[in-house]
Image 1: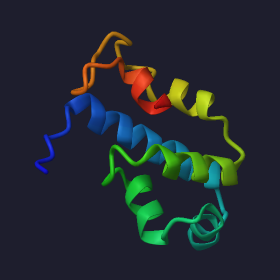
Image 2: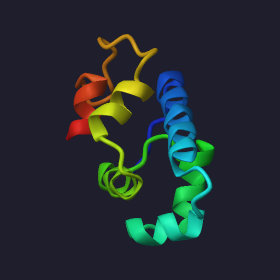
Image 3: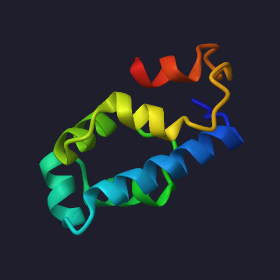
Image 4: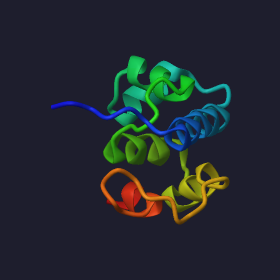
Length: 100
């Protein structure tokens, strides 16, 4: 399967997600947070650094649950500068993509 390149908006949104998760984690250990979420520390590191701009929904759901964050609040914050009408490659609104 060929993966299409990410759009600049997707890259920016991934960077905002990573920054938000780093802030929410605070002084908490990356290792402990990752293990409690059921993901590898390397996965969490890549998400927080923005290297994985479009992580799986289940991964983000698990991490936000451990950090006590609402998925609605996370989506609202990371999509602040998105137009809201921008469509993803699948043809769905960007907000619908995270929810699916």
